Length: 424
Image (cartoon, rainbow, N blue to C red):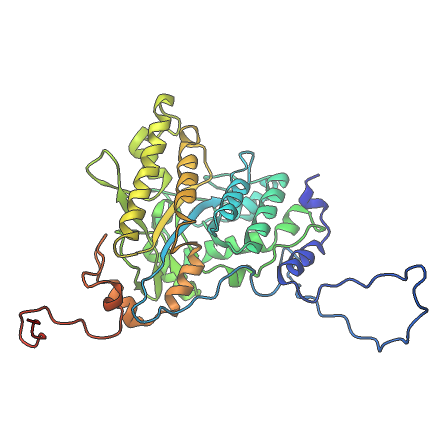
């Protein structure tokens, strides 16, 4: 029996108490030998209310504000923006590779938080597969399979810990259907809403579907936690975005963009992945492990072992070059997407870990989740953001950040009408 299954339902209360350090005392010390006799009794006080409120069957719970979520601050006039970097994971779940738990440790060691896009079917046991009714497919169909009780227990443990550490839990939806014949690119707005509702439901009912009713709940309300996503294979974005907007989502990261500052598109922050240098090649490459793999070994995930080290270094160096030109240039957030996969001998996981360790502890760098980035963007003066979006890839303000974001009109170039006379 997994450790997660043995944890009593009150364990999450202890975790939340530890995070908040408030209202969690369990009693005073007993009487000691030689101590004075009983003191005058104090009026009884009602115990503090527990911050935990179970939702539905107890698979999820409201536990108060998320711990370790920094309060976003508006840039001061003339202040250079921080360099944001977002590491995100498609189809997040814990399996025998233990990559979810590994990268939680890597993130904590390097002052980083991340976004984990959970596939809803990873919370649904194989024996209950027919509960999933994918749009344009027969019930119980999934191109990425389902899970077993142990896998769900392990995934719940990682999701719980990740959220309490300040990470975000998004969605990668369910069956991961790509291409023709019912792929997500062919889904209507209504079908996207149906898929999203099922992704939420599998998270909100994993206890019922597995029978693990004594396990601790996930410590968040998924209806409120879920504010963004990345579509499978980056397909179906147009109709998904309309559905997401109507459902109250705040961002989408299913597109491809250059390294420039984000804008809102149809009410959602467009936090698309970006194109970065591809060392040794004449074209730029999307910031995702899968795309590096396709351009290195083709569609096979296990290419020539003699090239594994080179391919990993190529991805690492491309991401670092993209980071550096933003850091020294326009400070546009760098947005990176990954999978918990050991493609080509795990070389892409090594590359990502190298990048995290190289950039997340640097001065003026914040490795954050999409939620934290969206919170920061929403906090800024719209005029400031508008100025930032005028900077092209790698372009630093010619007059310096202090003047560029000072809130004052930029000085006229010397030698033109109205410019101050040059000193003699």
